[in-house]
Image (cartoon, rainbow, N blue to C red; front, side):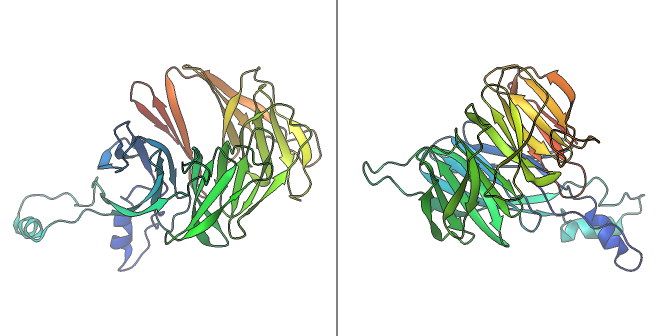
Length: 352
């Protein structure tokens, strides 16, 4: 969960106030167990908040805001509801009694802002009811959720196995539900600033939330079912797609109506991977195995790829991660990106 970037200290009367904000974390790591008990950690491993997601059944999907202007969580469980939580982060404040005792003390003091634990509050904001099928009055299985932003407007979005995408406005108003072209089950969503990408087994496309529509892109080079798709964070007109036969392909989508094949990434075998792009690199995580290999493609390599506009992509490293349960990536516009490895033992490893 990205937080507001603390302002750097400046000179003058406000310098002490601004330097205090530097003790606030710039991101938090969220973990949810099968009982819907959620825990927030700082990237240094400090547990700062515990709360319950309040669903009647175990949480299946969680999405966070990708911008810094407000901090929200969107959760889904098979009870047919989406829940929205607001997260607020402030400096912990001393009580009046603690301030009085501190001023009266003659002992050497350490700044109250040094190593302070942030005061974090999580508030249940709203519940969003997903529409039911007309034929049997059941909810289609949700395959992914997202907090997306288009033209400066935030939306809560859910994709499902019937090829549907449901959207709600920031205030919880139901916008509508529409199906993607072909009505294939939506396998996943990829959210970037101003762009929402969807993908099915056969193709990918762009979602227009305001217009309640989706534009499908047909690429003839996709000869195997799609496992994962996402943008190249170094050049967001490039879409990266991983296939079930182990291929990872890149397409130039400057013209969204024209799918231009650019290149095939270095071979990593025949095992399918899930893609997690961030600046300069894209991770490929083997799926369907308890001890997956994790590959890192260097997208920022100098040189030329298959076409004149494509970078030379190299395999930066590969390593086996034993007992990997989940891997999450926080993509930042400034500063270091954050990787969180969650192992089956319950251990969470965080890297920047």
